[in-house]
Image (tube, rainbow, N blue to C red):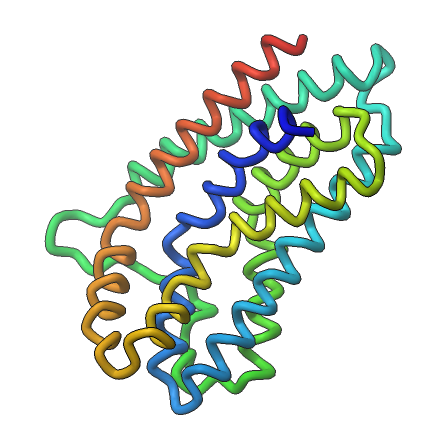
Length: 222
């Protein structure tokens, strides 16, 4: 089990340091119900990340990926995912804003200042579960978990560890707010500006690193 935990930690980190979900949490902390909205969004994000990984692990445990066997199929899938991430890395880097340009934000953030806790919860679930990047790294993590021959209980422990690490980034602004109160405003504003400005470059680097890791794992396992 320890080897599997070591395998999935990098993928959990890829989720936790993704800028846009963190920026959304920060923006919710400037709404009329900051703590309620941010807490609801965090809960939704946890549910979304946990759900998608659990489903992928369950599917991975029952599906033979190719006629050559699950081991070969998993290796091929890792290489395909790695190649997709490298392509995404190039696209993200080429699409980065020019110096002095405002970085674009997703359309679902429009009107976020008017969100209610219920809507924040729903958005958190969607961002945690449906985000293509979360699905790709979740699938990579699920391959490691499902192919390790762990018991159901051990798989559950690994999934929990993945989820806890994966949501630390989104949880951080809420923790800072609870710890610093009104003094947190300047810190959060600085985080928001920095994360938004550097989102494309951060994601490009993440995609490139994990793309190479997956291709390497696929070659080794194949």
